[in-house]
Image 1 (cartoon, one colour):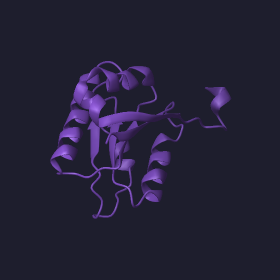
Image 2 (cartoon, rainbow, N blue to C red):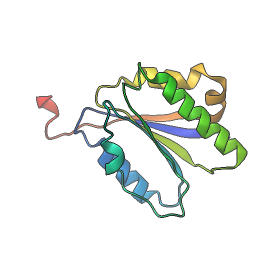
Image 3 (tube, rainbow, N blue to C red):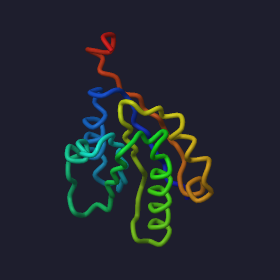
Length: 141
Protein backbone atom coordinates (compact mmCIF):
# COMPACT_ATOMS: atom_id res chain seq x y z
CA UNK A 1 0.00 0.00 0.00
CA UNK A 2 1.08 3.58 -0.61
CA UNK A 3 2.80 5.60 2.08
CA UNK A 4 1.44 8.97 3.21
CA UNK A 5 3.58 12.05 2.68
CA UNK A 6 3.25 15.28 4.63
CA UNK A 7 4.83 18.42 3.17
CA UNK A 8 5.79 21.14 5.67
CA UNK A 9 6.04 24.67 4.35
CA UNK A 10 6.35 28.13 5.85
CA UNK A 11 8.75 31.04 5.87
CA UNK A 12 12.12 30.97 7.64
CA UNK A 13 11.56 30.94 11.38
CA UNK A 14 7.93 29.83 11.19
CA UNK A 15 8.64 26.72 13.25
CA UNK A 16 8.88 23.97 10.63
CA UNK A 17 11.81 22.19 12.30
CA UNK A 18 10.27 22.63 15.76
CA UNK A 19 7.03 21.10 14.47
CA UNK A 20 8.98 18.31 12.76
CA UNK A 21 10.80 17.48 16.01
CA UNK A 22 7.48 17.44 17.87
CA UNK A 23 5.96 15.01 15.37
CA UNK A 24 9.01 12.74 15.49
CA UNK A 25 8.97 12.76 19.29
CA UNK A 26 5.24 12.09 19.61
CA UNK A 27 5.11 9.42 16.90
CA UNK A 28 7.57 7.10 18.61
CA UNK A 29 5.83 4.01 17.29
CA UNK A 30 5.98 5.28 13.70
CA UNK A 31 8.95 4.95 11.41
CA UNK A 32 9.16 8.11 9.33
CA UNK A 33 11.59 9.18 6.64
CA UNK A 34 12.46 12.88 6.72
CA UNK A 35 13.48 14.76 3.58
CA UNK A 36 14.84 18.23 4.22
CA UNK A 37 15.49 20.92 1.67
CA UNK A 38 18.40 23.23 2.39
CA UNK A 39 19.55 26.17 0.31
CA UNK A 40 23.26 26.71 0.47
CA UNK A 41 26.32 24.62 1.04
CA UNK A 42 25.89 24.13 4.78
CA UNK A 43 22.94 22.15 6.07
CA UNK A 44 21.49 23.71 9.20
CA UNK A 45 18.14 22.03 9.83
CA UNK A 46 19.39 18.44 9.77
CA UNK A 47 21.56 19.27 12.79
CA UNK A 48 18.45 20.64 14.52
CA UNK A 49 16.35 17.55 13.92
CA UNK A 50 16.52 15.61 17.15
CA UNK A 51 17.97 12.13 17.08
CA UNK A 52 15.54 9.32 17.80
CA UNK A 53 16.18 6.00 19.55
CA UNK A 54 18.08 3.35 17.62
CA UNK A 55 15.01 1.14 17.27
CA UNK A 56 13.52 3.33 14.56
CA UNK A 57 14.25 2.93 10.88
CA UNK A 58 13.67 6.43 9.71
CA UNK A 59 16.02 8.08 7.28
CA UNK A 60 17.12 11.71 7.13
CA UNK A 61 17.75 12.86 3.58
CA UNK A 62 19.07 16.37 3.00
CA UNK A 63 18.60 17.91 -0.43
CA UNK A 64 20.85 20.94 -0.69
CA UNK A 65 22.23 23.39 -3.22
CA UNK A 66 18.91 24.70 -4.40
CA UNK A 67 15.20 25.01 -3.98
CA UNK A 68 13.37 21.68 -3.95
CA UNK A 69 10.55 23.15 -6.06
CA UNK A 70 12.73 23.93 -9.04
CA UNK A 71 16.49 23.40 -9.25
CA UNK A 72 16.73 20.13 -7.33
CA UNK A 73 13.33 18.63 -8.07
CA UNK A 74 15.06 15.68 -9.72
CA UNK A 75 16.89 15.05 -6.44
CA UNK A 76 13.55 14.81 -4.63
CA UNK A 77 12.27 12.38 -7.23
CA UNK A 78 15.43 10.26 -6.88
CA UNK A 79 15.22 10.31 -3.07
CA UNK A 80 11.60 9.16 -3.22
CA UNK A 81 12.46 6.45 -5.75
CA UNK A 82 15.26 5.21 -3.47
CA UNK A 83 12.90 5.10 -0.47
CA UNK A 84 10.28 3.25 -2.53
CA UNK A 85 12.82 0.66 -3.68
CA UNK A 86 14.18 0.13 -0.15
CA UNK A 87 10.64 -0.21 1.19
CA UNK A 88 9.69 -2.71 -1.53
CA UNK A 89 12.85 -4.75 -0.90
CA UNK A 90 12.17 -4.84 2.83
CA UNK A 91 15.38 -2.95 3.64
CA UNK A 92 13.31 -0.38 5.54
CA UNK A 93 9.80 -0.43 6.94
CA UNK A 94 8.34 3.06 6.87
CA UNK A 95 4.98 4.36 8.01
CA UNK A 96 5.29 7.65 6.16
CA UNK A 97 7.46 10.48 4.86
CA UNK A 98 7.82 14.07 6.06
CA UNK A 99 9.22 16.67 3.66
CA UNK A 100 10.40 19.97 5.14
CA UNK A 101 10.71 22.73 2.55
CA UNK A 102 12.80 25.85 2.85
CA UNK A 103 10.99 29.10 3.48
CA UNK A 104 11.52 30.02 -0.18
CA UNK A 105 10.02 26.87 -1.72
CA UNK A 106 6.65 26.75 -3.45
CA UNK A 107 4.92 23.51 -2.39
CA UNK A 108 2.93 23.15 -5.65
CA UNK A 109 5.80 21.78 -7.80
CA UNK A 110 6.77 19.47 -4.92
CA UNK A 111 3.26 18.02 -4.88
CA UNK A 112 3.37 17.64 -8.68
CA UNK A 113 6.41 15.39 -8.26
CA UNK A 114 4.09 12.71 -6.86
CA UNK A 115 2.15 12.57 -10.13
CA UNK A 116 5.05 12.69 -12.61
CA UNK A 117 6.86 9.43 -11.87
CA UNK A 118 5.21 5.99 -11.93
CA UNK A 119 7.32 4.51 -9.12
CA UNK A 120 6.75 7.53 -6.88
CA UNK A 121 3.02 7.61 -7.69
CA UNK A 122 2.64 3.91 -6.88
CA UNK A 123 4.59 4.13 -3.61
CA UNK A 124 3.38 7.42 -2.08
CA UNK A 125 0.47 9.81 -1.84
CA UNK A 126 0.38 13.38 -0.56
CA UNK A 127 -1.65 13.19 2.63
CA UNK A 128 -1.28 16.82 3.73
CA UNK A 129 0.48 20.07 2.97
CA UNK A 130 0.90 21.95 6.24
CA UNK A 131 1.78 25.64 6.14
CA UNK A 132 3.27 26.84 9.42
CA UNK A 133 2.99 30.45 10.47
CA UNK A 134 4.49 32.26 13.44
CA UNK A 135 1.26 33.82 14.73
CA UNK A 136 3.10 36.45 16.75
CA UNK A 137 4.99 37.81 13.74
CA UNK A 138 2.91 36.80 10.71
CA UNK A 139 1.52 40.26 10.02
CA UNK A 140 5.05 41.69 9.97
CA UNK A 141 6.24 39.36 7.21
